Image (cartoon, rainbow, N blue to C red):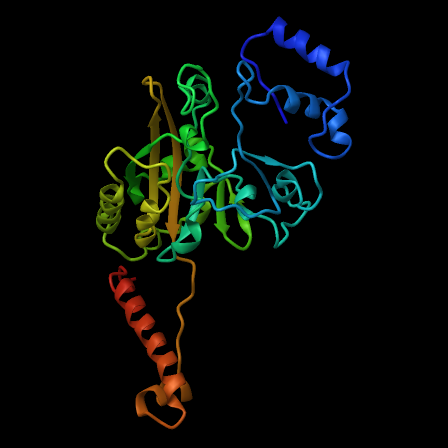
Length: 327
């Protein structure tokens, strides 16, 4: 357990020294009782004058609900059950399947999304805003006379709002190395966590047609950016990632600026770059599977249903690509 005091206290120091000279208390049931961690836990016990703010600490092998209320404030990496994230980031170790991929979310300030496939990106898009000062000065929910009474975790989460800027193809070079933009791009999935892709957006943009996935300029980008803005509740929300999934519906580069404000008017902002692209090859079907879905042949109930799904997907894909600029 780490302990942070905002100002030195001779009283606390002397009382800790006195406790340390006596037989230790039994808290953990093991040798940790004899360490400074046992001493601090025994002293800061939420008795009057010994109130503390306790924060949830996560473990990489305990997959957290990142859309829930009990989001870890920090991650404990002392064990070897999962590799350290800095080793995974530099490629010297692989992330294991039982480890929480969110905790390996390096480089998420600039992320790539696959077009029309948003469900795997919930935890990579968005921001979190915490305010430890609010936690330390919060009026308690039990003893309202004890300034600094430990609040619950929800007091640490501030409401987040955002603005979305659509970047046209003609302006995307401003976010490349030619303009000295320092952006490290990552592609993230639930299965693999975040994979570093490169530091130059220019390497992922071929031409205007590919940049917009065949759409006519920023028309679709503007539309879905507006949808994402309309989805955000008035006053913001603690978790805004789900609202920004709208952006995966139109290819191109978006610049999202997050902001939050605490109880006394202090503000904070953060910026995330989201590049939506289409790298999935189209699917084409011929022969028996296509024929059986059309003819109603015996055994076609299951296969027919399967092929109908394929055909619908092909039609939708063809409609999406119909606006490609002729070569």
